[in-house]
Length: 119
Figure 1 (cartoon, rainbow, N blue to C red):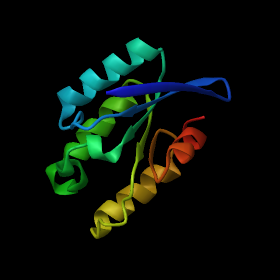
Figure 2 (figure 1 turned 135 degrees about the vertical axis):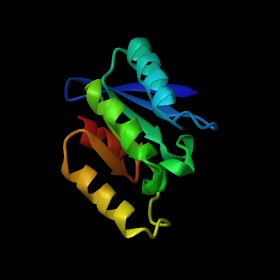
Figure 3 (figure 1 turned 90 degrees about the vertical axis):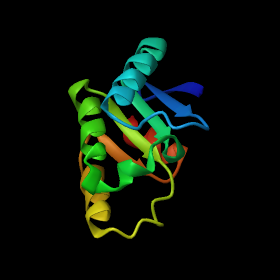
Figure 4 (figure 1 turned 90 degrees about the horizontal axis):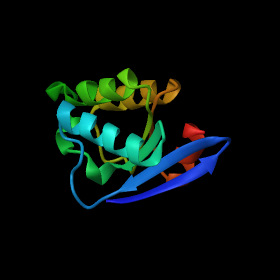
């Protein structure tokens, strides 16, 4: 996993990129949060969409809610970087929209947009 930490508006923002799936269930989310936050001393994390199980994007599985709840419980602001235009599910589009209206979870199209949202 490639990890870089950026300073923006007085916050450490960690951007993680990997070729493997690192978020697939509650336990993997917890492991990811603990690893990243302890290594980087950051509570603002961005991760590329390719590192997240496709089941996450099928809301009927409940995995998205379980994973994102871990980030909220541990007070981690989290951005998912990727192209979400290929998803046609109205509930998923609504979910993404609602997340982007909040202050903790963001679905963004670029690294720079993740930095902007997390700072």
